[in-house]
Image (cartoon, rainbow, N blue to C red; front, side, top):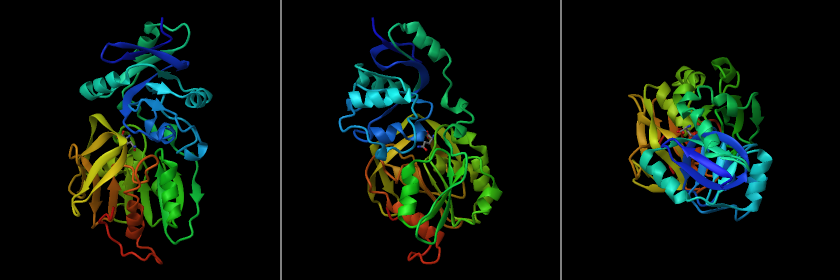
Length: 360
Ligand SMILES: NC(=O)CC[C@H](N)C(=O)O
């Protein structure tokens, strides 16, 4: 008898060792990141997903709150070949079910072949495969979480003061803390707004840049945020990261679609189409921009599958990234994006000229 079962959408039930008890469900995804488990587990973009680590040992350098990207763990459950005791204690404190001692290579191969799939999980002394199947039966697809932004956003305007002249209105659809840090470190004052902020809320801040954050789920469900982009495009420079790129594209006439299993890891190669340079990037997304529309140009692409990794419009002053230039976890190669965003703002005291071509 096992004390943990995973019921997969493809009909299989996988046995595992229970580390943190509970019953839950979500979309089963994997990350190939070999460091950064604290950052990944606290990334709000993982809301409503079950995160499988393909790296076999998770927790070997401890758990430190200073590395967290938000104030809680977001995946509904965590799966690894082996979790250390310290990670298990953290996940137990957070009430997030965890399992290990299963063949994660097999799980990852299934997701690669069949795509991200729903999973039901049951962990505890008396659980049965039927319990996991019951969870699976109640599991929604990611796009069915129509108001997922409400689960991860700030509920009130919060301001982080920088010592420069640029004011950024950051719409929080589940923003990682490192995005705020990267902007404040460069002197920007960042006003973090709820995901459903309206045009008046934004105008009141007189921002130099409207910045749409990363976040979980289907970009087409973020109606209020898309309306903000429509309203301010051409009036205020626009920036976006990950979900932010998808929302900007969708608002400006482009389309988005769900990927088979997405990109999650810290070594995704991205080519800048103007410079030809390739950088290694951190990624965590299951949707992508299928067509950028007439107003935006694709400026960067994924080397593995050619998907759009950067978009821009010189005319409208827009730059976006599908990957995570703020890193945490992952390489710092693309931090220059934040300099480009502030340069685009063209505020007084900024030594750069406004431009939309990336330097990263
Ligand atoms: N990191 C993110 O912002 C994720 C974006 C979006 N929710 C996706 O899965 O594609």
